[in-house]
Image (cartoon, rainbow, N blue to C red; front, side):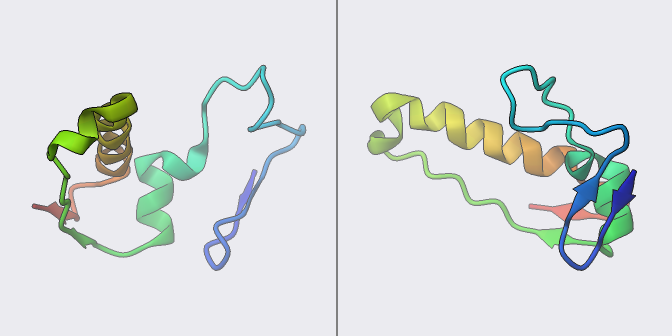
Length: 81
């Protein structure tokens, strides 16, 4: 594989489809080892909207999933509040 830090691009051989219906959901750019290698230590503040509008169309579930994806990329060097 090849990962480009400047653009966030990723290439795999043999070719791998990330956006197909057969996709397994595995994306190395969302793995802690890639995020740690592509960036330095991070200080992250996560603000979650918990207002009543987040209950519409399960927005709160999408927000929770987004926060979990962010936290999954963090390493021992990072700090989150």
